[in-house]
Image (cartoon, rainbow, N blue to C red; front, side, top):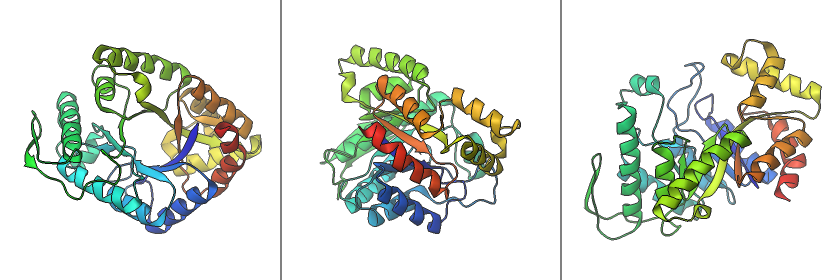
Length: 319
């Protein structure tokens, strides 16, 4: 199993922090680095929120080994032709390390705050599917044309294209059984399911595999990943202190104190406990087919937690 680190870029991320995170994640041996695509904090409007693609451009220049990408870009935020050009440029700058994550978008208040239309869910899913068609046709090279319900192309040529050919791996995030998993089956190189227990993951994977069978695609061709928040401690006291710190940063996570947060997190697909317990939970995900886990690092500057994972968890799950 591969382990990456995922940062909620809208929750206080600034350039000093982002540079420190990139350097530490790469030095510690994690496989990848990811960040959310949002415009403002969901906790406090006073928190910094770095623009996603500017920060990924910096990652392309200031890291040398990590795979990286958005988890995930809302198709409502940028026209897919613009997204394709940005992704191609960042992939070239990184020497071919970008993974392009896309989704349909979900936060209505965020769209309203910035004057961005937030269509009904069916239209957002149509935008996602048409948007993926635009991305793939532009990456294919040559004049690209497309007539969709949401987007069109008329002999468009995108140069320069990406370093990875035919395109950067396309990751589609979500678990909606009526549309999202159909889109994953048809288009995705990687499927990411957030906050999944092994049981929930197994149920969703079975739906995906049925859709793959219906179109004659080998489901093994789609890499499988999960985004999972975590609380880890060297011992119970250390775990308790980390839970207290989490509640101070994210008060909305619970009102029952650190013990309630720890117990509730276990049932929501978080990786929780000592390193040995974290290894067991990650191996359980591997057992149902998960190949990569993006660890959602809420407490951005708690490098001791990342050190502990790199030292005691990463070698065990990699083996």
